Length: 89
Image (tube, rainbow, N blue to C red; front, top):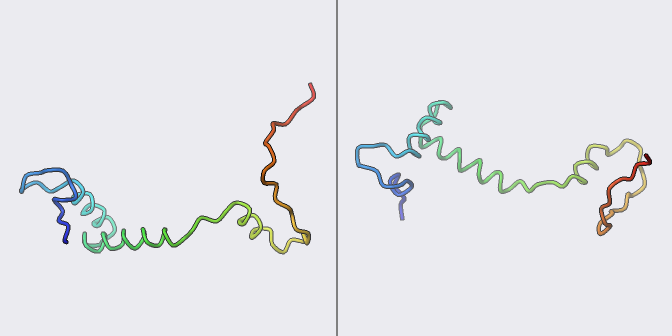
């Protein structure tokens, strides 16, 4: 089943350019591409971002500081209640 530009937007007259198509054309023009090339690029970017799973903070910190001299494993503190710091007046 092929999706037309009209089915992607709300009802418009046959002479008006649907808003999504107009925005796609403007974006394509900014990037020096045709609307079809721009749509393909948008889809490629969407698929790429699905392939890249987010990396956790702990993993990123470990990668950043790998090789700086800490040899011991640092245990995880999962399951401990979070409590605010107390300061002496």
